[in-house]
Amino acid sequence: MLRGASAEKREEWGERLARFAKAKQTVAEFCLHEGVSQPSFYQWKKRLAATRADSRAKSAETPSGFQPVQIIAPAQSRRPETIIRWGQDLQIELGSDLAVVEVVVAQLLEAARGANVRGGETC
Image 1 (cartoon, rainbow, N blue to C red):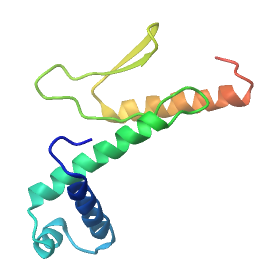
Image 2 (image 1 turned 90 degrees about the horizontal axis):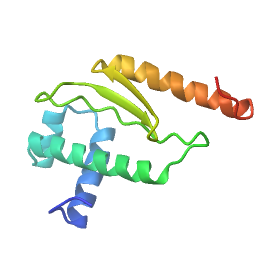
Image 3 (image 1 turned 135 degrees about the vertical axis):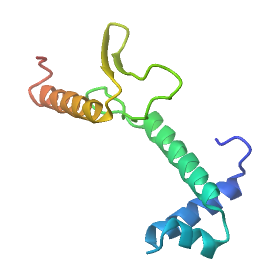
Image 4 (image 1 turned 120 degrees about the vertical axis):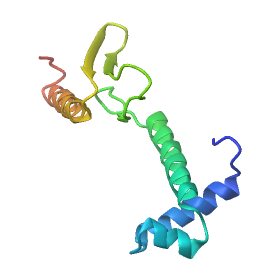
């Protein structure tokens, strides 16, 4: 749940963002027409996307045991890196190149699907 945001406000912005998805307008044009600021538009878009991602992550479970992956750019203030962990025993450090992270995750998911098809064999 979003701190300080009422259910009505979340619903209002959810509907507004759905209208934007159907509109053939720029964000600036849409916000002007709706009477809202562009920073508010982007803030609510980010908030509601994060809420949906959290809900999917909690409810989704694949046959391979993998959970959905959300790729987020690392914070500027610390050493950027991406780490993939399986339980407590396996860890892969990939650095900060998000394109590489996407490729590695896709390959891992493909390998996991292949293992399920072959009856659970591992490489």
